[in-house]
Image 1: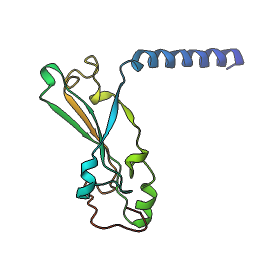
Image 2 (image 1 turned 60 degrees about the vertical axis):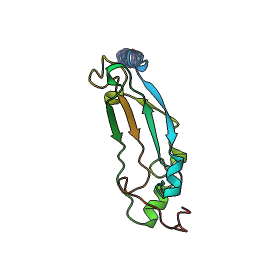
Image 3 (image 1 turned 60 degrees about the horizontal axis):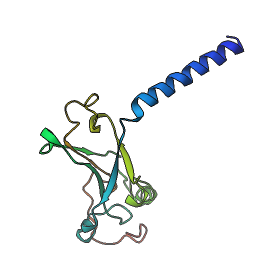
Length: 146
């Protein structure tokens, strides 16, 4: 493949990528984060002691009383060292989470792409306790500061 052919190939690939992003970029629904501050007093916290969080896109029309809840994945930390490392990431601290996330796919509000759930209440529950949403702080671990 000559240099002119390579240039045409990469220009075509770039144009296709731009066309795809342009066609789908407007469908992204950015949803703000909500922190559950009241959970802290009950011990339901992220690894670093920050409050748990979620993103909620309220439903509308016929979907106003229906709910789609997505629990974020992220595996476990299994000892103090891995939990300490994780506590400095979005999987261990709500302080590190994106403040706004795009709701796409099954969380999308676009009826063309998500005809079954586009107008339902859609929630993304953020994962930050390192133990599959079962974490419960009863005392402070000095290594974690939480």
